[in-house]
Length: 216
Image (cartoon, rainbow, N blue to C red):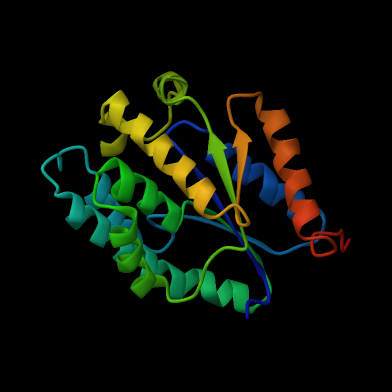
C-alpha cells in the first residue's frame, strides 16, 4: 500500500501538462509537502536513453509493437527506481504520462488494441496504478498549434504524426474515461492556464482531503 499519493497527468500533444505539473508542485511545496515531479518516458538515465530512441524524429520506421515494448521497458525501470521509492517514503508523485498514454497512443491510435497493450504494461507495472489521473483534453489541432508557437518546446516524432493520428489518440482517451471513471477525470485544457490550474487543484484537494493540507 502506498504511503504517498501517485497522480498522473495525461493528454494529447500541446495540452499544457508541463505547465500544470510545475504549478501543482510549487503549490504543494508551499504547503510543506514533499513532491516529486517526473515524466514518461524518462525520469531516470536508463529511461531517458530509451526515450531518445522512441522519440527520435529519424526513427519513422519504428514498428508499433516495438514502440509499445520500449515504452513498457522504460516505464518499468522508472517505476522501480524512482516512483515506488518516493511513494514508499510518503511523497506526492506527479508524473507526466503513465500507462494510459500507451493505451491511448499505441493501443488505440496505432491499432494494437488496448487490451493487448494493457497486458504488456500489466507485466511491467504489476499492481502500481495512480490514485488519480487528470486527463487534459484539448482539440488536437489546437494542441499542435500550441506546439508550433512554443519556441523552446521539444518537437519529437509523435508531434510529426498526422492530425488524424492525434484525433485517434483523443478518441482513445475518451474510451479510457469510460473504462476508468473512478480514476480518470477530464479537464478542459483549452481554457486559460490559471483556470485549468485552479480546477485541477480543487479536484486534488477534494479527492485527497486532509493529505494536501498545509503543514507549514
